[in-house]
Image (tube, rainbow, N blue to C red):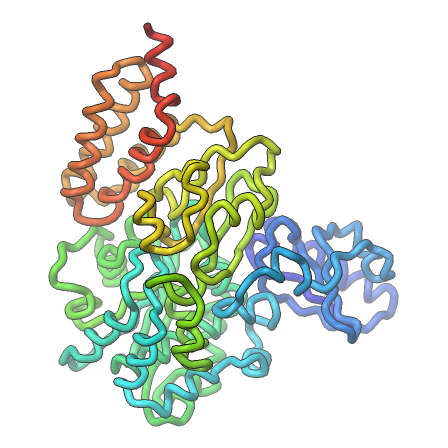
Length: 505
């Protein structure tokens, strides 16, 4: 009998380690032979710790499981959830990037290969660098970190650059509120990211890669370090990748967790041992990146998606999606929701369907007021925009952005003026200080919103003008995008900005 207990951070925070220990102890006391596997999460966080038991007829789920439930679990009398793949939240997904997450043992390379792992890298090893980059270009893959820049074009720029050394840098500095896709895949399917980076290396001619991880992710750091060691020991990394005669190796670098180090040039500075401040562009990192050499900087999900593209072909991936948003997107559902977790779906699903149907509405039972999509710099989307399809251009047209596809839900008790103030305060705290619109503008923004809250109507046009200055004058997205949550709150929920004024009158 195989028993799966997630070792994902979210599951551990909810008691998965205690449940695993209780299962081992109870099985030992009964003289029961079991194989306990610590898998990744299936992404249904409200069911964690989600224990799965395979008695030879498929994996049946139980959750959330407490240590006290373990005797009944082994007796077979604990009420189950049925086959995990048939739970509606899971069954409605299109899992390409996360196909193995929660299914395999994250640190078992044989298990990884038995579920399609390394097929993409093996194919890439037989292709020229031009063919690899062309395959990624044709897939329509765009950067999943937030910018949505076409991955193939970035790779091609690095491929064509003349240099004695090139690098692949994976941006794993996942700092947006409500996002966890990077962490989930690093803890649940680390070889997928390693394979994607190796393919990128073969594609652009880079022989060295780095994963820049934040220190707040100790489990992901541990899993990735062990996975790199295993991959190197088995010829997936090193001087002769899978016997193809081409070299690629990588290592893990840990950052202190400054939000601005999620911006690619700040990340590169931090990676070089410098203070994490934004660099002016040009030059682009693709031409002068890490240590001044041509560098691909991609997000975790972008790189982890590459293996399935090489395995199944560009057209297979491009057949999913909407408009210029091709493939799938792992939507991370958080905040005040009934069913929070990771939901991978093809681009195009309306926002309202994700919030009200997939996530089941609010956990409080109160009406939904707004959804912030794209992290702390994302716009607040009101109910009137819930018909917006999940796609880069579609969200842009509705005054929002997808960002890293994090989605935080608020019920009707949320005070949107205070949420706007939080956005400005967040920017003030996290600003690297290099450019004036961000460094000073965010501080003035907090003060201006406080004036509005105190009943000063003249402060509203001033706030609008300040946001325009920050948008146009900031060096990076931190200062440039902070106006998204501020102005969307002001535009869609003006009553929250008028309450104090009316009270003053």
